[in-house]
Image (tube, rainbow, N blue to C red; front, side, top):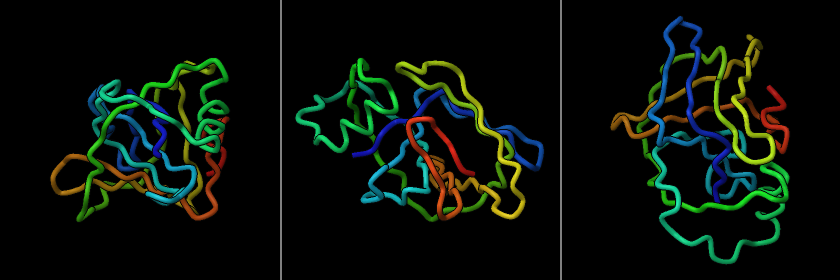
Length: 147
């Protein structure tokens, strides 16, 4: 199961051009690494509230409650995971996103590490992006920890 870590997404790119995604797009993460790498986030359109959440395994509920807070209401939706081929649109200098739940706010995360650059990729169909973080990345209840 993928978790939407945020929406209202934009990227400040090293080449100087900002990329702003449509408001119905989300930043998806797979904490288990089963569907997509733990260090890759997929950005695409999401239709929230289009399906029942059903029974959520305890390990997933734990991740969700840690990130959004124990009182957060779950909303499940549908996405068509974008497929490649992928091409680089550049190195990300900063990501800006809105987070929901207990820590609801507008957040930003700068990427200053030139040894481990964070690259953004787009697919040819313009239906999605991939934010590829370096191996060993840390994304948890606090959000982006490293890089």
